[in-house]
Length: 254
Image (cartoon, rainbow, N blue to C red; front, side, top):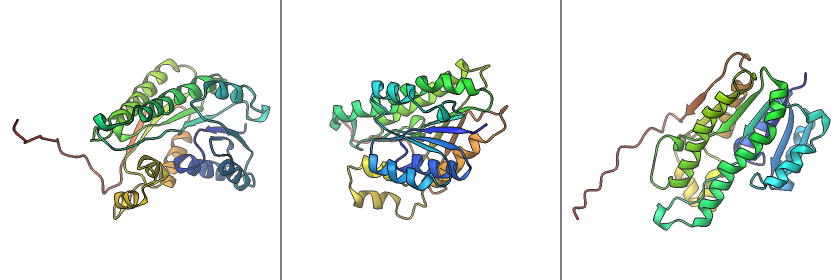
């Protein structure tokens, strides 16, 4: 049976790296993204290795997701895997200075977009049964707080708990659920978060030997290729250069 994988947010970062890794492994791919030109370029590149179907859409668009998934070509109909990668962080300011529109966008993408793709694709994953798997991209921010994380970290805490709850609901179906929680990773994700500030991006990663998208792709490939009786519940990854911050103390007497 051909293994088919659905990846959201496949036009950059982890999603793009996963598309390449799984194409090399012979999986058929359904790739989603908002940038048509990037999707087409990736499809052209990977079609030499495997079957690729692209969907230009935004995971926040429930109607668009419903239509696209309902009309998947027959050869991509039964899925073995789903990687819920689409997500973002916007800004690093403390909560009192944040833009509510940014908070809405993070909630709509990181939570609601993930819910739409998961619920709409569950019947196809269940139809595959034993060996199928869902991989959700969480973050260490879902467990460990830091200044400026506020809503982003809260959305990833949702992803963490939803992954655990979903696994309970899927017992007996053979469908596995994993939450991947990366630490410092170098990708376009951070450039978006910094509003395109290249200098801030460069300073963040200078000398850090951060995790690369290819590292995460390799990890996810390992997760989905585990024997079907094994479920990796969650996996937290950090570069060796990163560790947990100390507790913050305000020493200004008021």
